[in-house]
Image 1 (cartoon, rainbow, N blue to C red):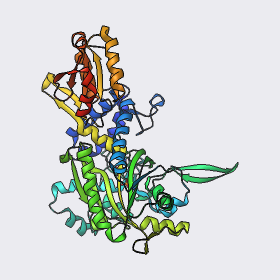
Image 2 (image 1 turned 90 degrees about the vertical axis):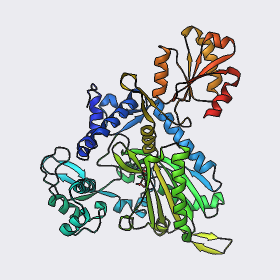
Image 3 (image 1 turned 180 degrees about the vertical axis):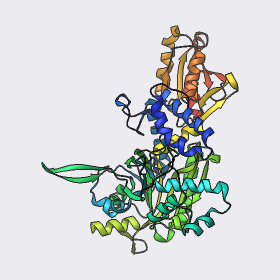
Image 4 (image 1 turned 45 degrees about the vertical axis):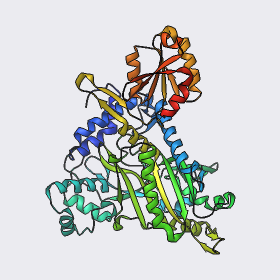
Length: 504
Ligand code: GAP
């Protein structure tokens, strides 16, 4: 890794797990690309290490001025597509701290855990299932039938380590003499054990007693808990959907790869309440709708996305069907979002715990049922990472290369850069800024050579720059310069707003 001064360590730590663990998977060339993106994010105000002046809290990130705008734009597009444009959708903003019984009913208190294993030599802790997934990929390089090999030797009945018992995970780790992925030294593995991922906090009840509360690990439960309220107050009929965007928190043992897996993140979740007999067809429709949003609305490259249906033995106990939409990150294919058929599991669980009736009465057919739920769920911050990876472009050769973000104009944080060719016509350029900033998020820049200013706007993904020079301006014109082609076009000032709108 290239030296980056004191801050380099933050990124080294953040990516350290990735570098060491995946070196064995031949992803080292890709890792450099990821590092370049991380550097750009820091240098260009997208993502900063959190509380940096106190030495950073590992794997926590702040979204800087452009990152915050990009995140907001993605969120607003999602709301526009899935709430504004759909007559049967409502938006909810439920609380992060909920009654702890919610998490008992949902199964999170009892079962929301990762299998962890310690290397007793180094006292490091790892996710056993993830190390085993890596082992399987490694074995595939030498063995033609890894499933047959592991079945014969250990009696496993699938290649999904997450579904193996803790004893089986420990047995395979020890049997295959898996090295510590960080130190590459021989291991002394403890028994794998479960570790609950929910963050706890306390609420004072009296001066000397407190109740345990949890920071929500998903936004979904807020929707289930408010189901009856929404039904009553919105006069919706099944099928209808509830959407929610908000923070979620998970005490991930291996937060990983920049903002891919973090302890604090944002989710955009939809719970689609449908008739129980329509769940599978609704699930199929949602898979297509989600792909359409990612490719057509957000402009992600279709070649970087794929659907992966969960195998029957991989499905959660409550699910009839689950599909991951995976993205081709520089570090391999990993989950971006999932679309799950959650059946009536959650509503039934909350009915049983709260003793409230959460069934639905269908007045047209005069029948009562508990709706099934299809859940398209995506991490907003993870999606932001994908938009940056997708947009990261290097054009040209050798010294002539140009790095820029080819972000879709709909999500670009700054839509228009406003640049006087020389400082002394700044007053004229500010008039243009005033006109444009009423319609678009713009940035005014008069410092440095015009070429450097273009390069800076290209790097943050600004699709258009408007340049003002005195000759043109006197005849009522400005120049529009395009980020991707670098071509320029003279446009009358009076038509500028409509012209730019037509390009967004
Ligand atoms: N309500 C269902 C649910 O929460 P999940 O697969 O655990 O399902 C949904 O999470 C989405 O949230 C994932 O597809 C991913 O995009 C995002 N996500 C989950 N854990 C994350 C983490 N630690 N950091 C960033 N994003 C995460």
